[in-house]
Amino acid sequence: MQFELSAVETGTLVFIGTLTFALLITLFMLTAALAVLALVGLGRLAYVVVAGTLLGLVHGINSSWDRLVRRASTAGLPGDFQVDFQVDFQGQPSPSTGTYPRVVLRDS
Image 1 (cartoon, one colour):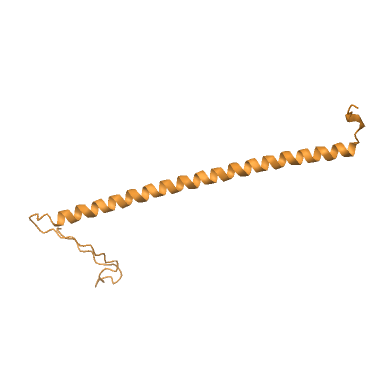
Image 2 (cartoon, rainbow, N blue to C red; image 1 turned 180 degrees about the vertical axis):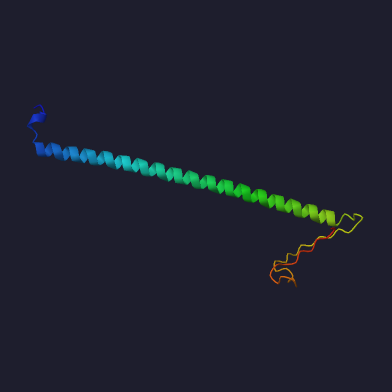
């Protein structure tokens, strides 16, 4: 017995065509979602690598500068070399304006 497509009813052909089209759309959406997840993952990985590298670079520069300043402060150079590691964010009240901190410039 040989299968003839003309013997199949139109409703059955429409149903099979609809299922095939739905399967193709589903496969396309799954592929697109997988590609988006991969791109988001790669973007996050790149962000973590770049942020970690920059953070390590800044930390290395800060620690190197700190070692350099501490070594220079103990070198016994002639002159007045002081290292002040305290930071005063409030400043001193100025008698003239009352709002801006007073700036003290040494060696000027």
